[in-house]
Length: 496
Image (cartoon, rainbow, N blue to C red; front, top):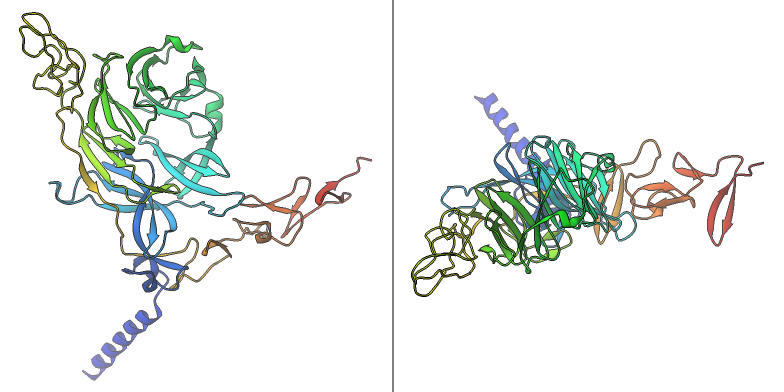
């Protein structure tokens, strides 16, 4: 009995000691409400509200949504890593009264949030290719917009294409065997892109056509443009002029695009004015679109049954600070606005209900009504709400009440850095040292690299042109000599 008491006492003392000392993972598992509970701010912070990033995609492999975001600290602004999250498509109880469950999937490494050269920040989730498991994203790097693949295994970013200043859009078919993309023209790739050379080897389909969204279904290409027009094209075209595209629909209020997809015969598109739709089988350039919601849309996606979208909210850098995720069902019929024909003085019945796209007042999804006089045919137009459900909030961003270390730090108080500590706006970043060069793998200024006059920093440490990398330095190799011109060094090698 005495021995049991001694053992019990030792266990209690050990437990208390661990509480006082903490452990190397405490900052990622400890429940918190304020920053001071996690250690020494700004080396550690308590996750406050979640700022959702731009972009939302559907992962059909696991029936979940993929979103991104970065937490605030409890007492300040965005802190730590941006994350990729999995978000359930349904509320916790399935009735709409609870909200969907969100879970952290991966960290996104590689941000360089300084105010100088090399500035790199995650921007948005672009598309997801479930067969290849490619998560396409874009990020900003030194003023350029970069199209990239996010590797979900290593949590790293692989640059594919610099799309700075280019009206870039991309779409691939269902089996991911073909890709179409728009820049200053519409192009075809066999397969889906994973490196820059895939774009270099593409085939020109339509010359000089600029798009702000693009869809590929079988051999059909659907595009929208910056002047609110929607066209149909074909992958069978080669070096065609843009007048070979067929005009399907016009919406003068749709000069921007934050989402674009096709379900059955309906095209859905979104922007700051809401989500709209039209039928490709019964479209007209003079028709009004079907209105699903007037929410201002940051991005949207679909699982084929429902539309999921992030409302725009207010923004800070690459993240919104008060956005929510909502869902709304797709149209149960494809009725909408346009003209319907009927007899007598009642409402038109031709295309208003079921799968028609006119605005007759049948019981389908169109809500406009056609009117006529006598026994002649009547016509009318109006916007339909589509007969679908009202938008429902499925997720409101909030704190997960967990502690988080500043980027690169670890330990019980997040003060251990196996590398070099850099500072930007009062927030530290721990970057590892490159064993080969002796330089930190990330830099904000040349002084972060070394005291050498021949080193420059553009996010990473490099030698000035003509100089050679050596351990912790850049040198002008023999038989060269350094010549200074207006304060700038050049490594000169006499050709003789």
